[in-house]
Length: 148
Image (cartoon, rainbow, N blue to C red):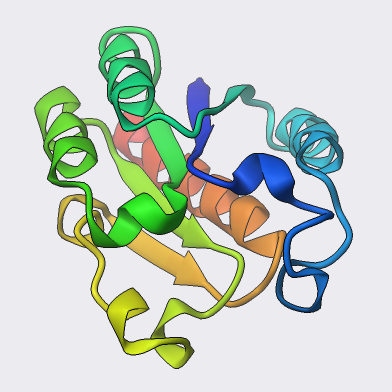
């Protein structure tokens, strides 16, 4: 089983950007932790980060016939990107949206996700653990589908 983990805009600034909200873990640290966790789950993951909407769309497209599911933190594109939303709908893979902070307790403009309606779940507010929760939940769902 292979899951694509996508990080969007500004996620490369983890460890620098607003550490009071996002902590001190860098993106590289997070990816190492997720690769380690993927071994525990018995899955393969591929991680990807881009600040460019079109590149994220192309990466989602590349998951078609190459991945079983997607975990995505679109960053600020969550609230604005019809393109990312449509790409997820197009590939029709089970997708979990994750956010390190609780987007519903932040500024009003962050409360609406363009992405959530095409995802099987949204997890937010647990910091880096959101990714592990997303991977675990997605893995469980995919295993249920496989086992019938």
